[in-house]
Amino acid sequence: MIFSYTLIDTFHNVCPRQAHERWWLKIPVPETAEMLEGKKVHKHLENRLGLRRATPLPLPPELESLEPICAALAVRGSVETELKTAVDRELGHTGFFDRDAYIRGVLDVLVRGDRNAFVVDWKTGKNREAGKEPLQLMLSAAYVLTELPHMEQVTAVNVYTKTGQMGTAHSWTRAELPGIWRTILPLVQEIEQAEAERKWPETPSGLCGWCPVLKCQHNRSR
Image 1 (spheres, helix red, strand yellow):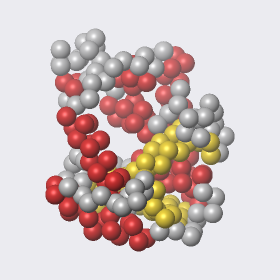
Image 2 (cartoon, rainbow, N blue to C red; image 1 turned 120 degrees about the vertical axis):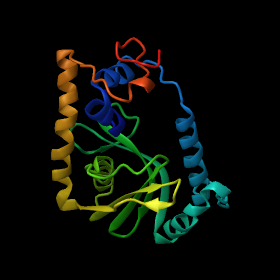
Image 3 (cartoon, one colour; image 1 turned 90 degrees about the vertical axis):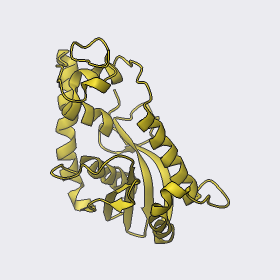
């Protein structure tokens, strides 16, 4: 199994059984209107930054509030979008599709400076940061610090596409990289333990009405 933030979050904050059926049993997950909209928004933003085009494409009217952020990113440093990255079990850098990939992710935007990097994660939903540890941003920083050994600090932030607002920015230095893994690895190991013991408890919640595990007794979408 290759781990990701989405798998970790689903297991610990949604439902272990859903995590098992989605990532181990590979049940189909229908694309919702929200998921399709999220893909469209990400594509518009990728086109605006122009990394695969001779001339960047302008944002559509509904995303114009993000233009100042895109413009600032374009002059801040070397910009990459949809960057696929991964670490192996020794927590060294490896390829996203390599056989030894252990934990991997995709960075929406990475801006490389000389010694500092800036990561943006586009969020098409509501701001739900209050009271939550920035685990996804932390993991993004770990990917960058691992893949780019000359980087000394990574700052990461969520940007909410419906409002054009930025969330709380968080920064991690290279000296803090071991601490990041001390936070992430126990979460991964707990999932590995669940697999070893074949224990995937159902966790009913208000999200059961949208769960793809149709055979679960708590699923209300049936």
